[in-house]
Amino acid sequence: MTETLFTGKNFVELSTVDSTNNYARQLLSEGPVPDGTVVFTHTQTAGRGQQGNTWLSETGKNLTVSFVFRPDFLEPTQQFFLNMAVALAVKDFAECFVQEEVKIKWPNDIYVNDHKLAGILIENTISGSKISNTIIGIGFNVNQEIFSAELKNPTSLYLLTGMLHNLKSLAELLCSYMEKYYLQLRQLHFNFLDRAYTEALYRYQQTHEYKKGEQVFRGEINGVSKEGKLIVHSQGKEHRYSFKEIEYVL
Image (cartoon, rainbow, N blue to C red; front, side, top):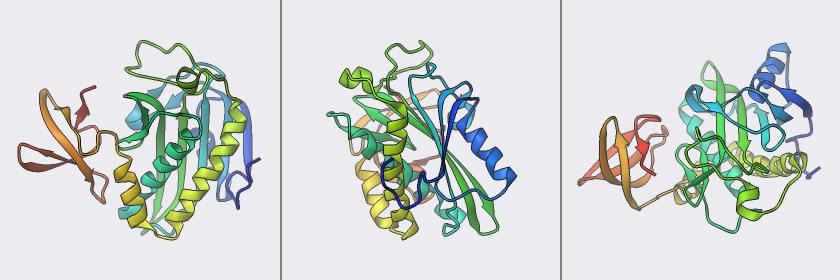
């Protein structure tokens, strides 16, 4: 087990489960859960992505894990900094194995060479003026070689490196990266997180095509607002988009 202060000290290992996020939520409903609890499964049967999307994963081939933290030092208006910290942690983790440049496709997909390597689903519980707990689900393509035609542009560590990896060992290693960035968040290092996240953005300060509704336009990503909106400059104007309001043309 990778040495950490608290992340993964309570490590729940399951052979199969519908969703690690669902299991973590059930744990929280039953009573206090230690900060940094990890729910890891070898097989996830009904994984979920952002906004109700399904996370498609071949049985026993990929890393499916959830982390439970208690970021009660954050206000609801600061929750996108949590998103930044998690995305940076998964990016750095991916860079342990991949020679190519790893980028964050806003808000929190992990990309290598225009292909999706990992996805993140964050579910926050807000109590009053604080975030009482968060469940962070991570789906990371590891040993899968063939993907469903439903998926636009997937890749995996195996496809990128030709090597197979032990899933539990990866989950344990990921704990150290999650804790590193969570501690940055806990110390309220928002400027550091914002700068690192912005510089890691997929297509940052490059001109590419995007789609809003039926309209395709060219624009340049110049950053993300504190609320988590994507800032795009197009035709001499600055536009800010919420999640699902704009689509990347790949």
